[in-house]
Image (cartoon, rainbow, N blue to C red; front, top):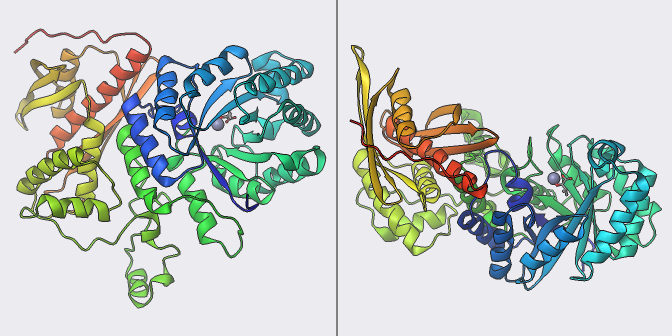
Length: 518
Ligand code: KIV
Ligand code: ZN
């Protein structure tokens, strides 16, 4: 293999999915996996098979779907975890078992309550046990970047002797500075026997906003695998963002002599599918995939761009799948034009999906004079996030004004059954949410409520995001509509649907009240 090829190990479905508000059900995970496959990532970490039934199923179903992609499951350093990972992965053409244990003094003492000798023994036992199932075993030193260097080298040596083919040194808490992280890799290469027979891997978290910088610095230190996630989702401040690393390598070929096999034209689609299924929206100024990443607003910049696009654009938007769309859609546009527009915007969606989205597009045209690209993105996101929902909004009526308390009527479809309620509250949004809570019993607290106008104009669609927290379950929902109250109701319902899904995973059913109250 070319020594400058960087393998992309995507952990959106494992480390990414673990983070608050980012959980996905099986269908959603498979949808995301399809986009990862079209990106041509080398390895997909599909879950942590032992963590839950849902994780096990996800690893299993991804394994069945995968063509050449290597499918991976995480496993702690014990036999049961490794057996469960193998069971789920055995459907895959190519698979990897990824086993890990913490190696820093802090983690060993307080979390594992193990001494160095115990940890070394665990590494030897777990890696050699995993090797009974596959030659492709990765070993990770959790909190590796904060571990004693001599001990870390000893652990790596044991892992290699036991048969690991990839050695990953995570910056688990996002603590390292780029040159410090690079130095760890350089020193490992100089201090561990047979290190050139394995692939070194970076895995960075973004607590200090350095995950991408650290990943690239680690590559310069000798790593040839990057662990990352779409949109940088992940624990706390997130993992290193795949699109940023891949585009940095591609754009700065002049000083970074590396390459990846990522088909970058699918980046926008992958980012949008992920934000739609998780309702975890990307900030507008996010590098590569944010709504403003290729927008030029100021007069000086626009003037420069007209004279030569390289004045203010370091990457072609087309390279990430953002085609400058020339098609303007309106109420007379047909399904064919709509489909072409979606393709130009970087979406690759199935026919059934397009048919449904097209119906909603026509409805939107009746409500809004001009249809902008951002309207279409919101429409497709709505469609993606509301598929397979248990609760659906059938009707919302709101009467409010300066001289009266708002009055709200809501009719929901819950598993094919109509339930309705009327209610009053402090304001229209409060009344709507109270009404829905009267129908779907829950103890969730509203943690976040955001309204954003998607485009300019008073007929713009409102995009509403809500985040709910019930006990330790945190979920978010986003929806858009030309009517702000409808968007609020739909976003709240999307979040409740996710709450149901998460509760189901833990076998706690929502207590549904079907009583008609008028
Ligand atoms: O951040 C981390 O240390 C991890 C390991 C389990 C690989 O995610
Ligand atoms: Zn991690």
